Length: 226
View 1: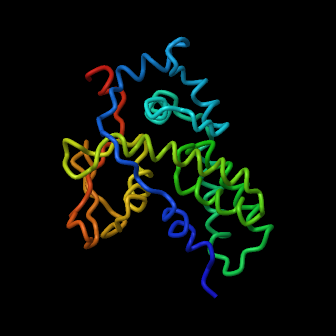
View 2: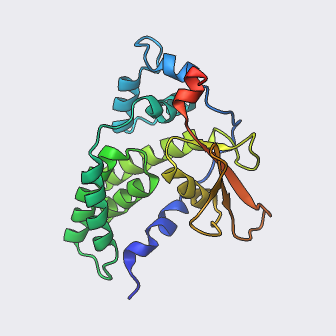
View 3: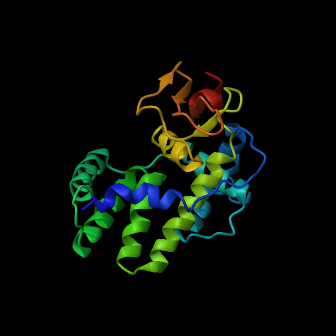
């Protein structure tokens, strides 16, 4: 029997579609000011709370402030605990016939990982899948709504086809996730970089797109100019 978990990403990303919208690079200076202003509508603790509740009324600009504002609010999660949880998670994911107990373990391990990597699309999708398998559909829908907020923010930053219009992310882990979500396949699990912009080569596709450019948020440089 095929390993069920190996099909997770394929099954889940097919349900996501990029909404046509004008793309523009994040203004980190403005975002930094807005998320610190309690009266701005972008105050980060409030955005974070609405995200946790899967408040789909968040506007695109609020979703952008939530995602890119994370660059100024990096998680205090324990990297060692996250690494250990990822290791245990991988052991469960390769099981050929996962049980309900396995799904529950995935939820436990991914909860730990999210404390350190709150915007990991892959981890969110694992959780959506497992909640669904356990019949906890409301929680599955919460995960999906949160994932869509992340994707909306990222895809609003650029199309990635040129350096000028590169896709901006706050974590390099999001780069390959976005490639898959858009509907491409990476040529390999490696990317080239010039120290500022990352480039992922794509497998042959109907659009003739050779690769996509990404830029990981460099907050000190963006905000201070250093």
